[in-house]
Structures are given as C-alpha cells and as structure tokens.
Amino acid sequence: MIGDDEGADRVASLQAEVLQLRRAVESHAIVDQAIGVVITVAGLRPDQGWQVLKHISQHTNLKLREVARCLVGWPSGSPLPDVIRRALPHAVDHARRVGADGAVAVAAVACGSP
Image (spheres, rainbow, N blue to C red):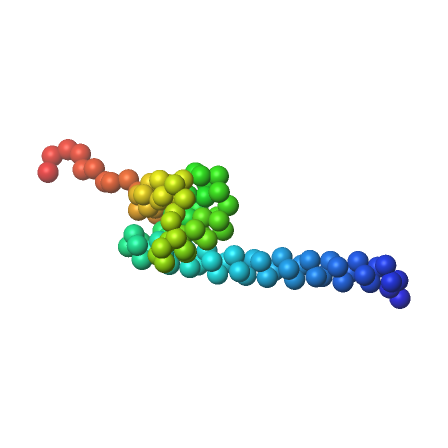
C-alpha cells in the first residue's frame, strides 16, 4: 500500500503534469492563431507561416509563444514590439525562399546555347 507521503507526492506530480499540459494546449492554440495571422497578412502557406514564427523567435531571442501572443493581438490594434516589427519582413522573405523541407530555393540557371 502506498504511504501518505508517496500518495501526496504522486498527487502533486499529477497536478503539475495537468498544469503543464493545459499550458501546452493553450500555447498551441495561440501559435495556430498567429500562423493564421501571418498567412493572411503575408499571403503564405501554413508551413511558411510556421517558418515565419520560428525565424522571428530564433532571430530575436524571444520565446515562440511570446512572438505568437504579440502577433495574435496585432490585427486588433495591439502594437507589435519593435523587435518583432523589424524581424517580420525578413522572416516572411526567408519563408518565401525556403521550402517545406527547410532547403533554400535556388533558381535554375540555364547555361550554354539556347
């Protein structure tokens, strides 16, 4: 039989796990909404919208969920922080050049006679 201390530890562990899962679900929803904002504003595909969020997060040293939270509020009038506002055009341009597999698209060049 589980002792009182072990049972209390197990309950505390499960409560912490539930809290973590709730935060993850909430964060996922905000990220999905931010992808929707980016693809609507920039005319991108969903995979490119995800690339934009990742690019901004990686190049601004901001957590992805913080970038997403700011972008979700932007259409309703919340100002974008300067660091995100400056990074957004570069991230969109990067996403347009990068394929779904992460490879940078290179234009084919025909050499030789026509």
